[in-house]
Image 1: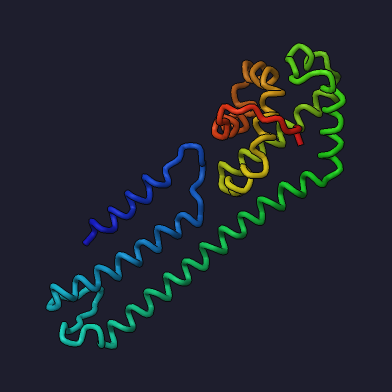
Image 2 (image 1 turned 90 degrees about the vertical axis):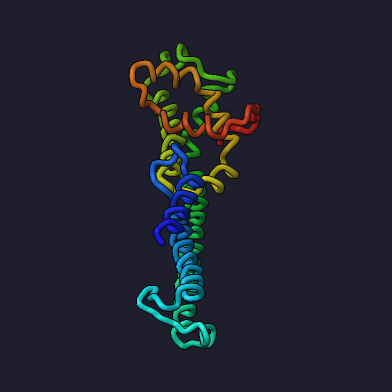
Length: 222
């Protein structure tokens, strides 16, 4: 009896195992619950088809009236109602995450501070494709703050994806090129800052590595 549930759990765990994420996706958990309810229905039918003398979940149904039995119809009805409710919750959870992802990115891009910081970095790098650590060290505190603002922005995006607060597919379709291009631009700065503190922008780097398909994006930073 326990084996089918263990099999579903192992399948779910192996399919959704991804060390990149720090928290599992809530709508994926609902898939597991739907699987448990579905296997319960199948076990109920099989159990009463071959071992009708024994109880399954406290129910005993005669084989002669199996498909016309009130208990069977009630059990199936409740089970499918649960599956329908779980599926609705799953779709709502996924929709909310996707909407939140789009709104978060668009709100940031429409903010005055975001646009000012990127305009500033364009001025600093108008003659360079990448920022060397040597040039970064020559910046004043305001210029360095601009660099850190941009890197922290992408770091926060990466953290949001890792904790499944943001939908990876949506963010990737909107920002993949920018993420990789931004890393290329500031790679020397990031690597040198990580020498003193390896945790600097580590989530941003992880996201870049995850999305990098060995292509050279040509889009702008924003």
